Length: 428
Image 1 (cartoon, rainbow, N blue to C red):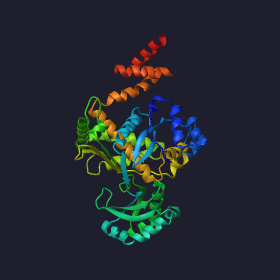
Image 2: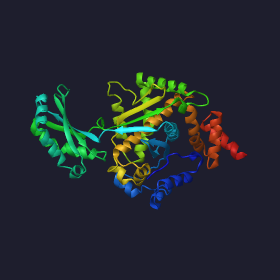
Image 3: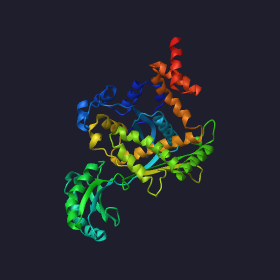
């Protein structure tokens, strides 16, 4: 299915008109259309089967990131998020990027780690070698628990042994199972494998196995994206492209030297990534945990992106980070709108989904840095946030746009101002 990710005048359309356009170009069925146009796509009975103590369901805005061209393919990106300006900023940066060829992405294989903690040993280095000697036997036991995964070409590939000779609880070793989980996120798979090999590990080491659990630092399952923008693509009426590029690089350098800034820099990246993860029913908490742990891999907290200038003077941005996502299992399989999101996006593998997510994160990061380096973050953000404030003040229908536009023009986005404008509008 070929789509055009450019969405001309999308903002000026009504929600119904926007959805009709997306439904047409992505060839959604009547049943799929009903999932979005009618409330309650996730029924209470289905929700009750997903988590505990269910009393209802909770909705968030479902938007579409437009203009994305990734590895030469146009992609419409479903984004579920409550924060104003996120979808708009990512889409606008993607519009600039497509003038220069869009985003290039790549990824490693879908390898996850399961950790098996062993305590109660006095010879941790000897125990390490005992486990390595019996590597094949350990792999056989691990792979005996998931014949379906083996049939799909996945399975436990290797082991690593990490030795901690001096801990407050005595010598300890941790064995990692390295598992190819294919198109699954893989948590249940690797946890089951870790539990299955534990009796053998105890027999081989003479120790006691405690924790048997996956690691969310999925540093063997990385997704990468790169974008290059020329000064011509970045210029505005007020500033040259060269000036904006220098400002973006200065802003990035601030994050590279200061963890206080890096935390906010990376939060902006996750502003783009998390909505994609939520829309597809994946575990955004696992992605967040892995992202921030990976940001500390040098020993200090650092940005997940880099921004630099190539020999021609163009701005080049890159991102590389763990991306433990799946197309099968969990909410991705059970939530109707998660399945619909994957169809709209047109991804064929978990690796491709991860690549789309990091491209959106890179785009969102550029939007934030560009704003910070020019007019400041609040100008655009507050203009979009004005609609929320108008709603809080009690505006309805056309009143929302009238009041939001007035507050944005005044650069005075406050609830009390919205109330005053609403009273004035209704009185007239």
